[in-house]
Image 1 (cartoon, one colour):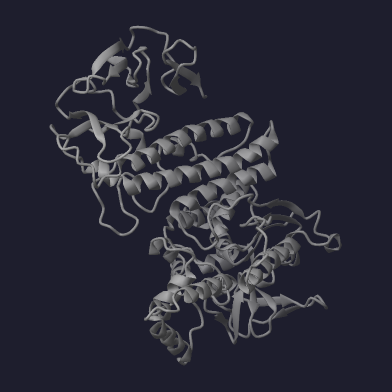
Image 2 (cartoon, rainbow, N blue to C red):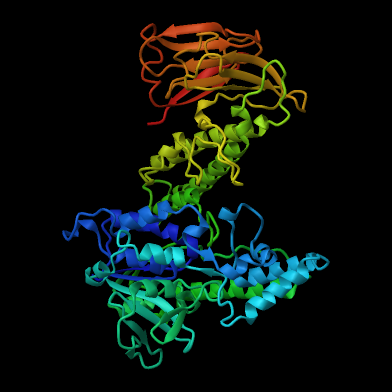
Amino acid sequence: MVTAIVLSGGGAHGDFEVGALKFLYQKGIRPNIVCGTSVGAINGVKLAEGEWYSGRRTDYSWGLVGLEKIWRSLRFNTDMWREESWLKDIPTLKQAIAEQGPPPKQMNFPLVVRALNQLANALAGIISCPGLCIELGKLKDAFAKNPPPRSVYNLEPIRQKLSNPALLQPNEVSNSGIKLRLATVSLESGELRYVTEKGRVIAKNPITGVQGDFTGGQPVSLVDGVLASADIPGIFLPIKLNIENYVDGGIRDQVPIQAAIDAGANEIYVILASKTSMDPKSSFDGKNIIDIAERGIMDIMTNETLQNDVYPPPSYGWGTMIKAVIKPNLEVHDFLNIDTGLIGMTIDYGYMVAFDTIQGSSQNQQRSKDLSDIICTTRKGIWDAEGRANNSGNALLRQPDPESNDMTNYDIKSMCLAINEARQKKRYLRDLIMERIGYGGNVPDNIRDYIFNWEGHFWTPGQNIDLFSIPPSPPLSPWDRWVITHPINGDQIVLWEAETKPAYTPRIMIADFSTGKLPLQIKYWENWGQANVLDGWTDAGDLQLVGDFMGLKHDQILFINTNPQGGRIMIADFSTGKPPAQVRYWENWGQDNILDGWIEKFIYQGGNFAALGHDQLFLSHWT
């Protein structure tokens, strides 16, 4: 069998392809032919290097392993594209092109038609602005230059990566034995053509079926061939391949399956970076011309091209050759947005969807497939909550004076609500992962790490780095270092620093929100060195639960020491409002065997499960 892997276009959605490829390779499915369009060309040229185990080298940065490393190293949009210099002089236009106004490093840039729509709206809204004439004059001057602006952004960051020998070896691509076909379109002729692993530019006459060579003498650079395939017209500058200008192959061929067949494939695995279904829209009654054009051209027409590329008429005879079409059901981020955390979870999502498509669970396959989507969506919710917690968390680190209760500049409540949300969703994520595994569904090896650790962020986990370029605050403890009761319905928030700190620095605070306004009421405050009741109970791996375990009509904290020596269980009561906390229950390791085997790995929760009028401890093995 001659196996081809076909990779669609889709911009930043190419991270999904990486995850799907990981599963295919894990199953022993390796390509003899790689065909790609746009971001599929970027991924494809790296695959065509071949893998380290081929005997030609021992460098683990080649092929798929290296491709994943590159994707996971990306943090911002500027890691893939940058705006052209002329745009910087026209801030109104720049603002109009942006979908909204988040921090510059995280802007989402839509396609030209969306930009024009927003530009029109922006100009309509500032028509009386004194600076408008100046801005329009700058715009006119920019287009009057010789040469005039030819693009909004450039692909220089990608070019730099592809030109780095540590990231890509074009000679290895040429000599790996893997055939490569990168789809691109000539602006002059309008024809669809393919750049090969040898740098040839070829095309097949759609009428005669005869293949022509348009290389024009010297082979073209593979780097240029990749960029030509990924060059969105109007957004990026066209790429010159010999005497013609080339742009994104997705204009004519989003999924180059026919190219794989022409190259000799008889077994084809197709990976789509974007979903094939269209999201419905509300009524277009009263919509303007740009809205209508955007829906018709950018949504419906583009989707039609994709559907035709993947599901052609039966007369094409592709049916028996296509072994699988791996495609997402959801899109974690938009197709021009780069974020290190969203990339990581999309790679993991692609892996699970590929498993569902190629192999499938041994039980309840539909539910297992649904869990792939739910796990990914849950992780995005955790990622969002962690980001909100980090943004508003600097208040907690600059601790107030407990005597003054001055909380005017603090947003502890928002931070704690976000931390609590992240903790709840991580517990839910744990249950989802274990449910999928229980059905025989596969998950990436690393995904269970996110039950206990931070998702990926472009700020350093454990530090409160403001997204709007405000200098970093002191370090913020990870979400799992804080014990938090529900900060609503009359409850307070209990916060403590788990790492040992110098004496007389803040250790524990209980904040009361019952007044509904600032300043918050501090109901308990304890500094390090003021009491030793909690020493050894908040180490890494130790567990804490909140509930009325002693039937006192108010909550206590149940501590579990996972280090099998000394105290094992302690219930501490903070109701006196001053240190030390009162110990209501104490059990040493070896004193009783009821909990033996339940401490290491279990699902735990406090609640009044047995209707006793006070809380109990619920434990359940999860492995």
